Image 1 (cartoon, rainbow, N blue to C red):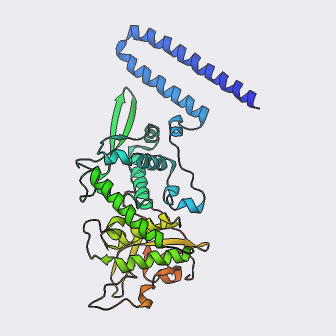
Image 2: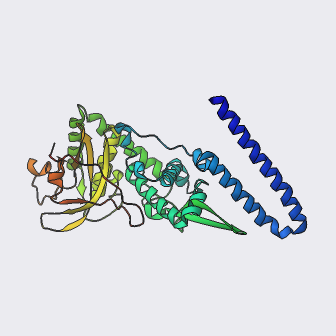
Image 3: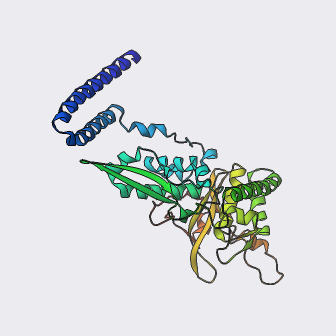
Length: 361
């Protein structure tokens, strides 16, 4: 069987070489007749060879140069939950982003995306790539709490279009637009970020070390630590929307609470995802909100550390009833005042969240 396949591949390779040789001779003859027509003929040759290659391999060979992570087990899925929902095109973009974070720290502009996107753009249009890029970015920044220093509003897709004869080709890059850096305003350069990363890692390390026992004990400890050590902010300030602000500065909005909780769960190897949507408070006011789903005892349960940490007037204390009102809850409880929305940004895809257990833990 193996020898037959090898022989078949050799025959195909020979056919390709013969075609190239014939076309090469033909183009040289035509060049002597009409030099200005050479570019168009080369483009046509390229397109025909590309189509033949696609038929041989069933897909663009360039895509195979990007290694996609295999995250089939639940224990590993914690860092790639949203990645798994992306199209193959968006997965290629996601992995390229992750591999080039260091270049973003160096403020490198025009970070090249894989050449395989050119074929996708030809088939689907450049607008398709723009949506897949946004979806990939949404998934990446939602999966990864550790990249707290990157400002999503400063990351953009750059498209370069080259037309030769009847052929149009596309090149895509990650860029920062008119911004000086990709970083949030609190960090000016790579040195600032490296110091912040080290500080966060040291602080989180101390806390994680104290989270002992089984997974329930660890989840409970992290939940309580966040509530007892974080001051809720009514508006977005420096780092209040990320894990660094919550863990190091002890100040956060709901997104900061949720990202910090996921950051800890990732450190503890407990599957956890960031969830966004709307929530209605006791006064009937509905607002954008973020919380978490965590996996324990073969089921997903919701945890809302923000709402388990209400603002207390004066010197009062949070009662046990309030402190655990949204701790490991099922859909029957959460659906009363929490509504999920998988549309992270308007330009990206709509993601799906894990299915919660019906009853509370």
